[in-house]
Length: 316
Length: 219
Image (cartoon, rainbow over all chains, first blue to last red; front, side, top):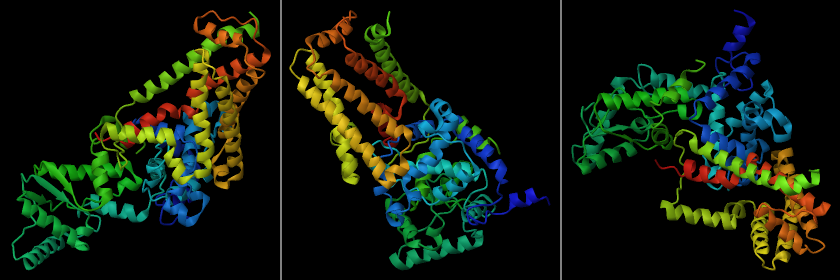
């Protein structure tokens, strides 16, 4: 094994939980710029990226709303400062003013150290989007953070716990906690018993019902740790007389792709949509968990759009 | 044609043309971008009346800045109100109203507020970390334009300076009486108009997209 290959397979000691299969250091700048070009070329993010990156007034209003900055008081947690890491690169390579005037307009040539700073900064943000709510110019720094993370993922900088979970979800077991099918069946049987004991009514949790009106999926934790939510949903469906079902193959709505990767987001979302289609369900209902619901709402319309697929496949 | 004549006779038309074209191009460009990922940010004001209410309140009070960044709000609000005021009162002045003094007050406020914000960006460590040359240049440029405008009005603007602008609107500018100070004001003002659509100060139209097309997108 060459030294370079070895390096590419090791985690960055500085970020052991945010890196896997790292690209060799000297190749990172080129890959970063190529991926940023892919993202811009895909046209999905063009409007928000152009307006967010091009018009931020640096008023620092965002800092007063950011709970991370309010706690740390660390300059690296200023939302506008963090976004500026990507803004400088965008200006340098993708705007005429940046190419011509360089530092005068805040443009900066990308270095490997800049990428290190981004790994740190983009994962200090929790993407809550609170800073965008009261921005006078409606700049949402969370989108910039997300795009930054999507690019970093192509370099190998990605939270290991998320990729491990996503691999399990996209694999045979079909869920992020790798719950075997038999255990899942046992869990649902147990929850049905709980419902019967509590209400005295045989409230079912239907499984793989073809043609059901509602296809229900919840984050896996709702089935095994926070069952009260699921029990409430089962009661609601029962009281409404609704036809619903849980898929035995795809019951986990978690989509960690939201936090680091467009490609994985699309794979997980497609899997869910295909499961609903195969059972011929008309409506997907996603249980309690903001991110899973948001993925469906925010990205479902992108699903199937050619430029999105072009981007997902670029550089892979 | 001498340089002075070019500045007085031709440059204002070029500046206004570039301003309108630049603003129009950027508006059309953003409008033409394909439907992007839905990136709605709640809470979304209810319906068009709710959105208008929010925007009007924000535009006339800078409420978000007022709530979270009071020191910057003082300068920013004063500067923007003075910019709008100077344009409004100047139009009234050209229409024959006696609003010269109000124009002068507004120009003074612009200069003062710009210098105040520059100072804030230097003294506040977070704002300093966020600011680069462009931020300071934009403020200094604006202050320079306002200062030159004020200088052109002192001693009192002669009636003929009003006639110069009226002549411009009729495409028959009489420039024989313009002084160097007047020419400087026209030149800097024109450069600012050309620069405006290509700078980050384009937020006078970008806000429409960031609010209505992105954050408040429901479909």
